[in-house]
Each structure stands twice: as C-alpha cells, then as structure tokens.
Amino acid sequence: MDYESNNWILDGVYNFPHLFGGLMLTAALLGLSTSYFGGIGVPHLPYLWSDMGVFYKKKREKKRIRVYMDGCFDLMHYGHANALRQAKALGDELVVGVVSDEEIIANKGPPVLSMEERLVLVSGLKWVDEVIANAPYAITEQFMNRLFNEHKIDYIIHGDDPCLLPDGTDAYALAKKAGRYKQIKRTEGVSSTDIVGRILSCSRDKQETEDHNSTPLKGDSHKEQQFKATHLSQFLPTSRRIVQFSNGKGPGPNARVVYIDGAFDLFHAGHVEILKSARQLGDFLLVGIHDDQTVSENRKNHHPIMHLHERSLSVLACRYVDEVIIGAPREVSKDVITTFNISLVVHGTISENNVSLTDEIDRYAVPKSMGIFQLLESPKSITTTSVAQRIMANHEAYKKRNAKKTASEKKYYAEKKYVNGD
Image (tube, rainbow, N blue to C red; front, side):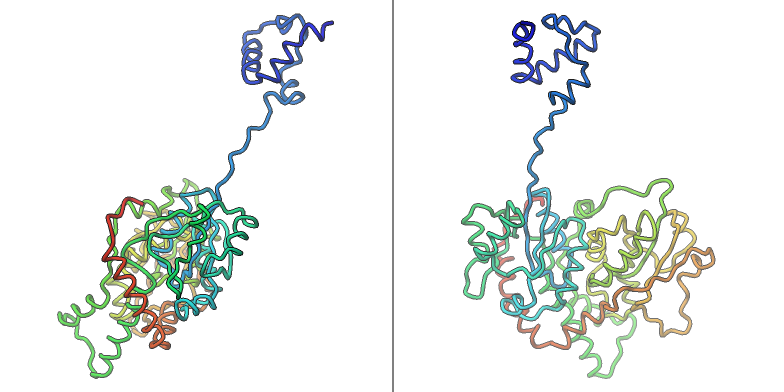
C-alpha cells in the first residue's frame, strides 16, 4: 500500500527528473524532513544520485565535428597555416590529408619536399589533430566514403581559389554534391608558386652577377632596387593576423624559459624538429627571429627569401613554439636574458650563418659565460639553402610548373572580391 500511495513520487522522479530533483535538493538544503514527501522515507540524496541515476545521469555529449582539409603543403608557408587555422575553426577536430608525391607529379609537377618532410611540417602545426598520408589529389567517391565512414569526417574544407584537375573539372565536385563541403578564404599575398618564383629570381640574379664577374658594392642603389624588385612580397601584415597565430599567454612565474634564435627562412622540417627538441628542455619556448637586414648581412644579399613577418608567422604556427621576438638582436645579451627571464639558450648544430669571417663575434658569449648555453644536435641536415638548391637544380621543370600556375593565380587576383575577416 505504501508503494502504491507513493507512485506519484516515482513517476515524478522518472518523468520529471530535473523538476523533482530540484524540489528535493531544495528540501534537503532547507532541512525539511523527507517524510514530507508523501510520508515515506526518501533515500539519502547522494545515495539517490548514484543508485537511481537521477542527478548523476550523464549529459548527452555534444557530437564533436570533424573536418578534413587536404593539400600538397609543398614549401610550407603561413598561408598554409592560416588555411588550416580557418578549417579548424569550422569544427572541433581537424584531419589533414597530405597529397602523395605521385599525385602531385601527375597534377602539378615535381614537389620540392618529400612526403616525409611535408608530413613533419603539417604535423607540427598547432591546429592539426590528425594526418592522413598519401591522400589523393581529387576527392573520389571511394575516398570520400572512406573519410565519412572510417575517419568520421563531417565536412570537407577547401579555399575559395579554384582547384581544378587536368581535365578542367572541380576536384571537390563530389563533396559539394554530397552537401558536405565548406569553404574558407584564401590567404592573400603568398603561395608555393610565389616562393618558387622568388628562389628562381635569386638564382637568376646570382648567375647574372657571376657572369659579369662583379660584386655588388655596398650602397649601390641600382643593385639594391633590383634586389627589392625581385624579392617583392605581396604580404600585408596586420596585428590581427599575429594575434590569430599567437598562443596569447606568457610563461608562468616559475617556468623554465628556453630561447633559440635564427632566421627560420623558408620554414622546413629541420626547423620543426629543432624547435621540438628545444621545447622538450623547458616549459616555455621563446624564439628570436632575426630581421631582414641581419639575415642579408650574414647570408649574402639574396637572403632572406621570406621577409620578417612571413617568417615570424611560420614559426608562430608551430605547435612547439610559445612566443616569438620579431626582429630579435643577433647577439644574445645579458639584457635579453634578463628581460625575458631566460633559463637556457640553445642553438642547433646545423647552421647557415656566414662564419667565414675571422673576426666573427661569438654571439652566444654571454649565455656561455653564465653557464646557460647548450648546443643541440640538429635532428635533420636540411637547410634553407639545400631546399633552394633542389629547385635550382631542376630549374626548367619548376619554371614550367610556375608558368602554368602563375597564369591561374593572376586570374584569381583579377577576379578577386573583397576579403572579409577570416
């Protein structure tokens, strides 16, 4: 009889758990007798939560949106990084497909970087959660089903610049037809084609100088203007873009701050690996980026290939980097160490600095005297120069590839409309 007379209580618990639970919680807080509720003894509240599952009932977890974006990611630059940043903003987890060498050759021409190098670069970006190696250039029906079923992808992402197959068809047509396609804005001012063009220009300028058996004189305005013309960047840096790439937080009061500096020109797999090694030595990795003049003075006037802000964004996009100093001094002084509370200064064994000068000042003399300097074994032997040499060694192939790609990029810029904030 007691059970029957109190059916309304159990009905309330199961049919209106939040309402009934709220009433009971209020009663408990006010110290009211549980016998008030129909004259029966109501179990102790915590017991009720665990046994009946009314209050401990798990909330239905919101489905995490998984998005997919693919690309060649050859000569990784801040434009690639920004595209993946935008893609990640459209979901919760970002899966990135890295197109195979064979597919790149068939659709665009020879890649500069190997698959292994491109995987290191993509995996090293702070917005990337998973990577699929050897992805196809075109989203075929078979691969699209694999993305949806095996990788649980909700949307396929690409930029607003056209991606056409050799036959002129849209590489993302099937994804669009399936209603599982989303578009982001292309990052203005840079592309792999543009970077290859800069390197080819460097090669041409260097060859012309050697052919004429002349060395540019310091202060030669004509030569300086020619240098600027052949290395003109279309990038327009804004504080907003830097904020988008930044972690937005500094080191804790007791954090071990590790400092590494350099040009970080033409950001490559060697840079990623040495930054990873440096980050493992402390709690916060601070990276000093040398300004364009410093790089030019120490690597001759055909460097840097990327200017200061481009190089800074590439480094900031790396998941192992916490903060950068844009235009850091070449010499690591006591003032720099004190200002940024640096605990350890490191430098890799692979370096491109021009050390042929006999009066070269040891720029790490101060941290060495303080006992806070460490030489790190560079995990890879790749350098900016070695990457550039790959292009120059295969000059004609890249020149042909660039001519085709440059035409489509000119068309894109000619038809470009206002770019809303991305």
